[in-house]
Length: 232
Image: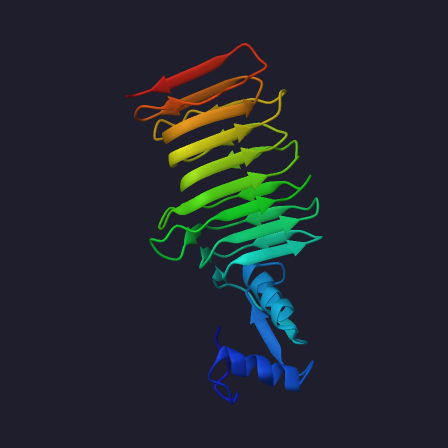
């Protein structure tokens, strides 16, 4: 949290007190309407009970400080996102987009949960590439499914109503649980994948590849083809 030097405040508590003493008079800026910094500001505004005006700009990065952000419309994070604490992002049947990377703030792995109803989830940048996530959970009922970038997390939980594919390697030393629906395929065949345990609760056909050994948990498919390639 940064403030203009002309404001007579030194702490967050003083910022809140000043904003409450002047409802509607103060503004907060973000990297753009619908971006992560916008939603972080709205979250702070709501939690503190403030009447402050949003002023969008372009560019920047986003720090999510934990808790839950719920919107009826779409959420778009155009800039790189850092998780300072466990965070849940929810939309009501609207899209959720990460256009850049997502990382824990430091070596302490933070959890991230995404839930969008029928809304699609788009993950464009690497997840946990610098600092891994703890549990990464994504759930929706969208027929577009998930196209996964490179992901590094302790645990991965994916539930959707469409195909699950990947464009980058998945490094998940704990348990990966996958549900794509009985009509949809799961294709995770990047040669750099490194799983601990994988369990598939629903899919049509499934193909998995692992750089090392893979522990296959309870798995159910409705199709006729299950392919597993493991190096250990």
